[in-house]
Length: 315
Image (cartoon, rainbow, N blue to C red):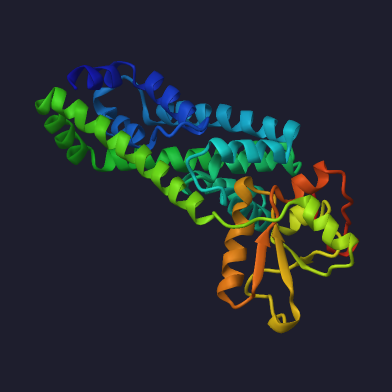
């Protein structure tokens, strides 16, 4: 444990840079505690608070800008890929998109304080065409607020942090093991939350071929699009209605079947809404397997509502 603290003391800037970079790149390795510790050790270090802040902001900006460029190049495919490898629930894309559509680039100022928001927000900023200047401005502000708060807390409670570090040093190898166990418990908790979330999504689904056959045979299922207005503006399944669960007010006796679709991994949002609809008393409700992506990949038509268009770029 003493060697770890010595490493942080002698090479704190390098440790902070790598830790922040790795975390913002998507790895479940929290960097906020390291920022707090380095903030508490400022008096005994050879660097200033502003230097430490600059290093943390630079590392965060490099990772975030990488996600931004990936979003610009690969669009929503990058969002889906990111959510698949993330330990956060698959609904994170929809939640992040809702926040970003509502607040735009300024939401990046608080992105790092919201678990699961930062990386996805950067990808989303690129995917929707946010101007580079706006992205960089608000991302730098957000990174400065986030890392600055940790450094300030460390300096403010430096005595308490020092006492805690002394306890860990006295514990020696046991202190290292305790830190390792804490990290493993953090990762395990994230994994368990995701596993429980995926279990909740288990239910019967309808394929795009089955839905197309229904429509061609004269069937009239209620098709519900639960994506954000931003996504719906790019096209939706013909006849689909854009409603949230709270808005749906249909005569249950006149509804034969409800098909719900989204564009998130594992049809997460569609499955959640489907179960909520079933709880409201609707009989046969099924998510569309693969969502709008599977529908488009099968070569089926989509319609664009020009009266419901959402701007695809932000100043």
